[in-house]
Image: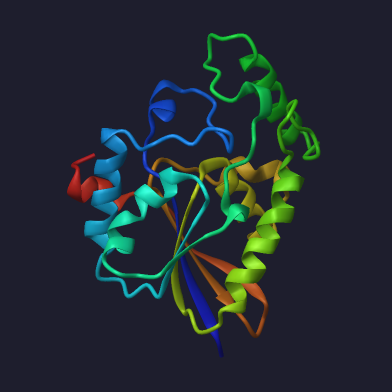
Length: 211
């Protein structure tokens, strides 16, 4: 029986995360100091896991989060299918700015089942799934990689987990996340099915940063 174990983490904190601003595919932000500490804590906690490959998005916050593993010599690959959703014209907006209410309205539409809804210039969850399918088809084609690390983004993770685990996209918010949280998935090639092993694990932050 052939299986692949996938460690899936969200990137570390950016200033946009800290301020509560809308941060999607259109913002290529660096990790802030806290985010760098979170990334180091994750590396220290999991550096002895023998990952055979690291997959990241095209946005630098995922590269910076996975840098410890990449610097240690683990091969990595960047896939645009792992990018965050595009929030279109509300990218960078904060709670008190014009446009943020439109952001909240589209989230409500998704929860109500309209997962084709999107913001002006942005993507819908269903459109994100299309590029995620292409990325995972590529990832799963490498059957020799039994243990991999994927670093990506919060909303994109919720969409991906819903798709991989067969959950309706309208229920994606059940997959809670925080910066550098860890989900572990297992893919069974014989059954062609994913299973969830661990969800929203932040032990590395509690142990190494006392959070």
